[in-house]
Image (cartoon, rainbow, N blue to C red; front, side, top):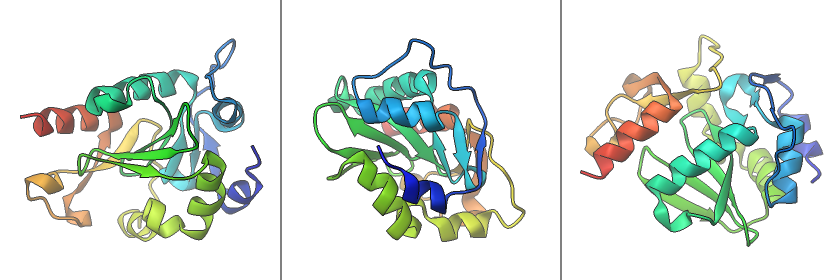
Length: 184
């Protein structure tokens, strides 16, 4: 999978966790290539992070618990600064976005290379809310691999969609709390 456009735009990259890929693969060649090249990397202070094989497996399980219709259908490959998880369909050329802040899932009718080389290039602000990240991150904070910027009060519980309602949270804790609240 050619990711030259992506690499040229997102030059500020840092490996935060090991790839731990020895003997590990997925059924999707492009995901294997992505993890081999960028597994465990953070881009632009955490605006986007790419899972490694181990964290992908864990997050695929978390997403499928939250959205059971995707069980045995997806592999989660990355996430953004607000904790939206991105996944690839195992059998189709679809990419998915899962947003715990709204409790919604979205199908992006495209190949994974288009996600990286089109959405994250031509529609970067719409895809990753770069302007929101810059506004929140005026102190140039670098998010740790497991950290996201979450709503203190979820939107669906009346929380405001602005930086005064943001806090840094553990990604897994944020998903679990929101998942439990959504299921009540």
